[in-house]
Image (cartoon, rainbow, N blue to C red; front, side, top):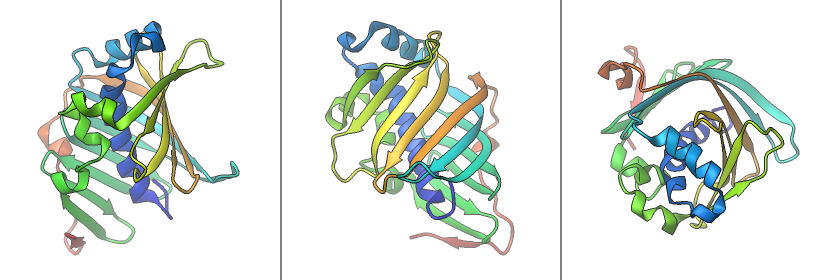
Length: 219
């Protein structure tokens, strides 16, 4: 979520996270029993997930374009609170019906019906996991850090807004890192910390009340 592509980055992250959490359950056992077990541990009984994050965006040469940090709350299904605090604030919120993207610096917010915003994207997999093999190739990758298990998703759809997603899980099933590359070669690397499974999240967590005077666009 950076300028020059923050909205795309933030929306993509939610779509990819939701896809990864469910899609890889369909990974063939031959791809790696340990990776499957780690993912299944993470998914088992999962109703929500909260974490602090740091995010680095790099260009195709590896040059760092921006570093940021923030907080994420995820509620299954279809609810999200994603806030970048520094250096450029931005908030993305889904209440299960609408998807809001709010830029405080510009006093602008964009609102889309959830169905329109997420139709034919990986986030739809939350409620339709049986379709995931149709949309992704998946594989397990070697990792230098023995404490992590890395899984990769490659979209089958040539019109997808990302080319690959890599997800790191710990052997006990904790989500540690996500890395994805967009169509322009930009790489977003998100590292999660202080994570909590099934936190006690109020329904208001997934509701966005923008300040008076904010320009609200409904494409």
